[in-house]
Length: 105
Image 1 (cartoon, rainbow, N blue to C red):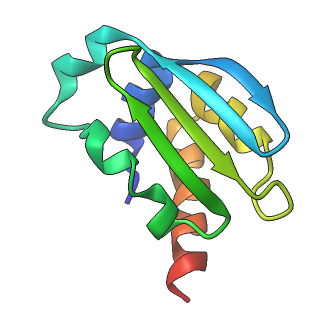
Image 2: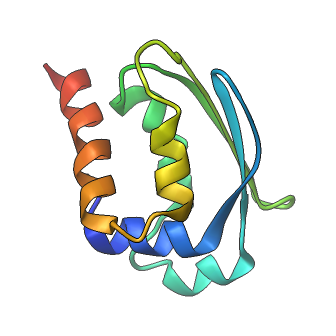
């Protein structure tokens, strides 16, 4: 589950490097490691098992890159823009958690 705090940390430490319909790559700021108690980057790789519409997640720690392939008909690409730049952390967390619930149903 995403919390307001985890979304805030992610928003402040990721930026969109490349985005096409169905595929997004984030660059990850090295300072995110200071928040290892709140954010476990290795768990983000499992998003494809939790969120319907995510096909695959690839984390390259050396390149500080996270790539997500997703079904654009199920997940609105605006959610990724919001994750990377919105200051409405609670709202973004709610939207992401709704995607998780969709997978569990």
